[in-house]
Length: 185
Image 1 (cartoon, helix red, strand yellow):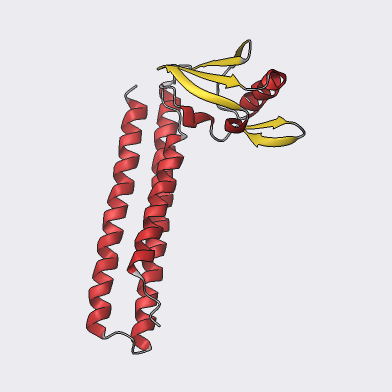
Image 2: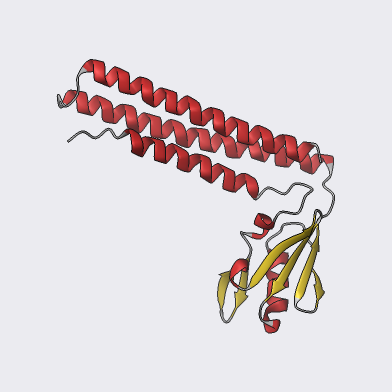
């Protein structure tokens, strides 16, 4: 049976792009974004839990996040979890709600974040190229086993390269857009 599967290669490259978009959404720009708090872990009921399992996060204003804690006894634990996440946010307790004003970014910090966006994109492109390499190796193996002809292998290699080019361009575009967003706010 042939090892090469175009759909699998497409799916894996798409996965690299989705991962990149997730990483980029976690980068803080001047605007409030609820995904900024996704990595926050909170110690409640004797175990570590993601913030979204003990509270509702919303962005009521462009420069403010609001965390509505479901159980009043967990408010202090949520505050500690946000403080330990090193996001540069100072929670203000207001009953069962924590308000998180978004501080202004310095020019130096903006440049660091833009550089980080570029690094995330580079990791995604490396992952995409690794998928391409796997696809090319599978095609050569299939040809060696006489499951496909040399012409089929070359045609399929062109398809793999086109997919690679498409997803690398997508990664570049996502990073470029995020860098612009970071630097112009």
